[in-house]
Image 1 (tube, rainbow, N blue to C red):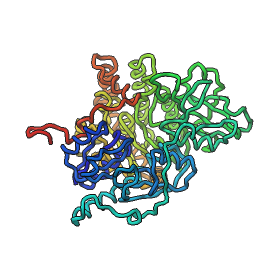
Image 2: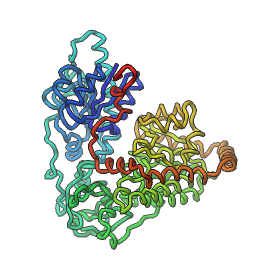
Image 3: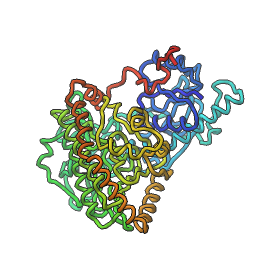
Image 4: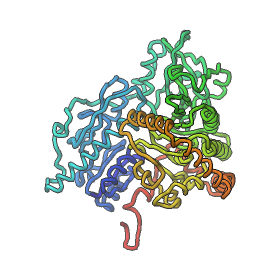
Amino acid sequence: MRILFLTRSFNSLTQRLCLELAALGHEVAIELDIADAVTIEAVALYRPALIVAPFLKRAIPEQVWRDTVCLVVHPGIVADRGPSALDWAIAEGEREWGVTVLQAQAEMDAGPVWAAQTFAMRAATKSSLYRNEVSDAAARAVVAAVRRFGEEVEAGAEAGAAPRPEAAGAPARGRWRPLMAQADRQIHWQQDDTQTILRKIRAADGTPGVLDRLFDTPCHLFDAHPETLAQRHEPGRVIGRRNEAVLRATIDGAVWIGHVRRADQDGSFKLPTALAFPAQTANLPESQIAIDAPADASGYREIWYEARGGVGYLHFPFHNGAMSTAQCERLTAALRFALAQPPRVLVLFGGADFWSNGIHLNVIEAADSPADESWRNINAIDDLTLTLIEATKRVIIAAMQGNAGAGGVFMALAADQVWARRSVVLNPHYKNMGNLYGSEYWTYLLPRRLKSVSPGDVMKHRLPVSAMHAAQTGLVDAVFGDSAEEFVDMVRARATALAASAELPVLLQNKQQQRRIDEARKPLAEYREEELAHMRRNFYGFDPSYHIARSNFVHRVAPSWTPRHLAVHRRFNDTGWS
């Protein structure tokens, strides 16, 4: 079928659903929800059999939903209604939640149900649940709803007919709940225990954050982690710092606050807490922890190493997958530590939500000179990638639990093997960020991997790719694991078997020999110099595209049009609009 996606942004859920339906043979186009007239025009141009709306913040025009079936993806159980579905589910401690695919009608979230899926809730942020449980459930529900729609069309059913909620396989137990206001999210530091505070911040992470005061300044709080303290402190008081996060006392312990958005400044955006409040955090007691400390030693670590079964594991769950200059430097130091340990197999686990998304655009935007900080950041991630490439005495596995984009993808290619969970979505390109050329030694790493496409095909392709498609092209070596837990267990089992394999010495010998051959053919320093020559023009040249695109991304500037690589229905050819 020809399916039009109508969405506020081309976010992770929209990307996942587009890939799922395209893999089933459907023809998919995307239109960003900019204005009613633009939506109406898009429908007229594309003439879709079906419209899917995975992420909207306003109603679909009546002219559209009356003439074409529109399936809205709602992150709530059947009969749940309102714009803060997942927020309320977290705040109220729901043990089970779901996704409902319903037909758009005049009343919001009240149309006939086409499909529904449920999942067990876990103690996590709204963003993490959205990228994992919600995304997985939405994929199942949307595929089921589209299949059901296709069956009804084939059967000659009346347009717009839909099954009752009971027929969708889920009872209607939800209810209407309003937009969650900041008054509903308010933290009472003298009353709320650590778990209550965590639940409130998690229900607002990544948007809108919990409005609070830090250093007597209004700001929105994000990225909270628990800490157990033997000594009690005045609740609400900031008592320490670890890297860019600050530690704030509660009535029964403390919480780390990793990111904030100041509310006293126009045009502010989310930043690591210490960067948002540099003067206030400068003299806070620094609380560090050993990289290989036991897993339960602290509630917050941005990087840690563990070894088991003859395998080393390096974790780096950076917030939203972004890696600042300082984080790249810390990760490089951690990588060198890991490479000095006995295990000859090292697994890079990244984080549960993201493997890596490359350089940290928010930190760059906040710098006195974004161009200079861009240059420092790209060199820091290049140093990290170089350390991986030159680690010839270890077999290195990049295990992607979550999505990866831009430089994060190419950094992963420096590993010997790239393994990905089935649900992972990759964006192996830079051009959407103002035509960046990219670095991370991609001109060396990419060509040697590809099977069926050229490096140019990958770098010019501005659309996401699924893990399965990435495996077909050679970007990924193995795809497995339906759930996050299953993927991690399978990675550990495979890595342990590799570490015990009699073939391991041969693999390492071949790796060392190939690196010598490659270096003799063209030194890594030349690849880096050539890439950075392009990046220097991106950062300091006359074309401001990168700086404009970065600023728009960081400040969440709403698009004025849908990019043509998404809106295939707006591409012009010899016969007119396609």
